[in-house]
Length: 265
Image (cartoon, rainbow, N blue to C red; front, side, top):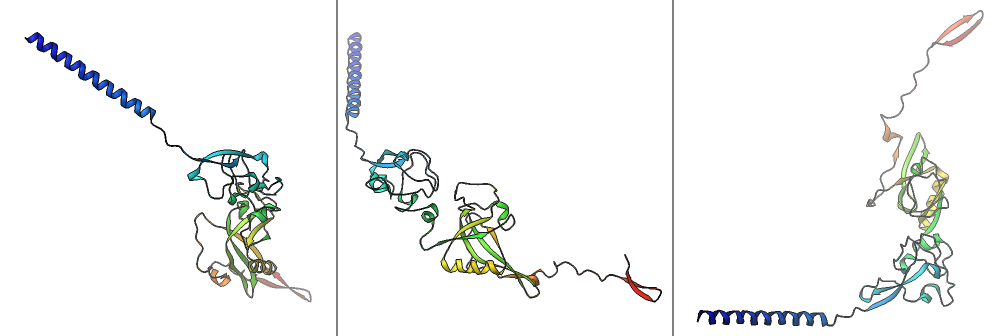
């Protein structure tokens, strides 16, 4: 009887294990055969190569990429004609660096027919104005396109000098003839071109005739003060001025009928 019970138990375990194995294989097959949800894609234009500010866009710099339709960036181009026109002769330039494979966007290229880079990057309602600088007034050459600066005027007044901030948070468009915003490091330039409103351009023009303009580089994230700081003049530096030169001591010497004053060293 014990042998019969043992045989029955072994048969039961084998049948249970077989049933469990078949159930697992069936469930696995069902999962493998399940229909994967279809991801909708859209074709958009991307950069075939690295494009820098001021580069003209042509068909040779473009490639197609399949992009998830639900996450197509705003301003992307789905047709070459929308970017370069029906005949591919619409002039557009890049306004900031575009890496290979990065979508071409309306915000990274100029308006159709843009004639040069400065026109393309000028904010609406702003004009370009050039200022002469040197190694001192230009922050030793550490001002580059894309930086933001405050502009100071130093001019003479009765009894000394005065320094005042005349414009704040002004963006540098170019140094000399270079508008590459990827440029870093020191490079001495003779002029900087800034983006300003018309009335500010007039103010700069008058200021250039009054005295000397200097740039003050703004730090990252620095916010513009509600009001420009008060002017600083010679009176603000009282106590720091050079002491007056002491009057030279002299002795009077008679040489015959002539009396001369001789300084004592």
